[in-house]
Image (cartoon, rainbow, N blue to C red; front, side, top):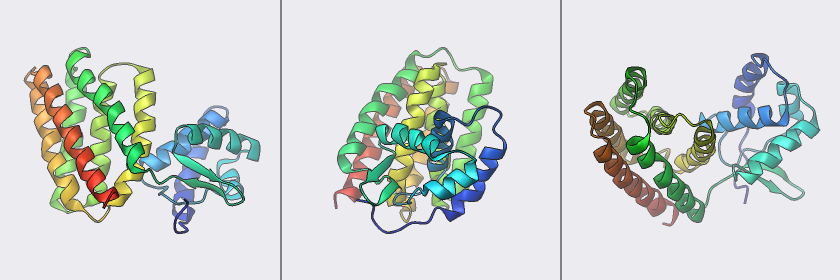
Length: 233
């Protein structure tokens, strides 16, 4: 179901910037990437109706190109097409959350344990994300904590050096951002994971990659349980 009407107007300015900075053909694949990034960043929220007219004007693409992008995002379960009503940013179900975490348990612990040893630059980037998470927690800023958390997990998978795994994780994180909207008023949900990210980084820095992988597996179990408790209540 689409749920309450949510406007995409606040996201249009950001999308216009993305369109203006494009340096390649604005294909359906490019539009899907732009919309996916806007969802991951929290600009497009669950229930938002994706107007073909507004998005076409802002992104400078045809309706056919938009429909190609919508088809791709629908296959990823990031958007939902409702007959006679239009295309909406999806609201993931509890069953979909379980599947997301099944994928994450395959990707993230393996990246920590089996990817090539992280470079000093990769460790520094992870440390920067952890620092931003701590800052968000200090200000009780749920959005900042969620954003830092998303980026931490993205960078963990990026340790694998695989463009295919990066693309898969981008899809999962876009869906996860939609789930996190259900926790927008729950800073207590995000706060423990700021510390857990820091602990995993410490294990990586010390070369204890197997322990980092075990910590991540437990972390994902706890996060899944917390989300499902809210979604199924």
